[in-house]
Length: 222
Image (cartoon, rainbow, N blue to C red; front, side):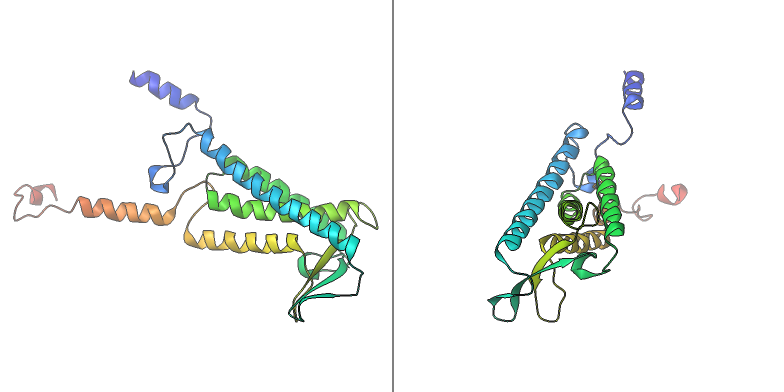
């Protein structure tokens, strides 16, 4: 029985085993099941972000006039339709093709990372990043002046701040969340450094060192 069990373990594909109990994940389920659940979160968030970005840009192009801002909350929040050939928040004007390649690279990295994605917070953060990246990449592909050189539609304006869109917001929020998760010690594969540390401390507290006064064999074992 033990040999058969070991052979079954050897045949299991690498990366298919669920995280350890210290991560807080459910290890009773089959290995791939938690991964599919996390990928569903990633794809759902990305789809929502992408849909909102596309719809708002279509409305802006259809309803607003470039250079004629619409005051939503006085001068604090305005809708100001403009085109941006750079990155998020109008950074890097004139490098549209380069930022298109960067966006494609980001999408490919996220797809590759999804193969080992067990963490729901990481799935949410990566979904924000993926949806925003695809949203702006769509503009660069389909809008003038040409494929991979198209200018991104920006329209959200706050005082003393660059004009941006919903995709830019999603990219920024996703990036900030990823940094916070990294500082928290939570990794995309579901491992939780803080939980592992607390579990180790609890194990030490539950199994204290033997007291020589009550255990005559403690000194010999030491």
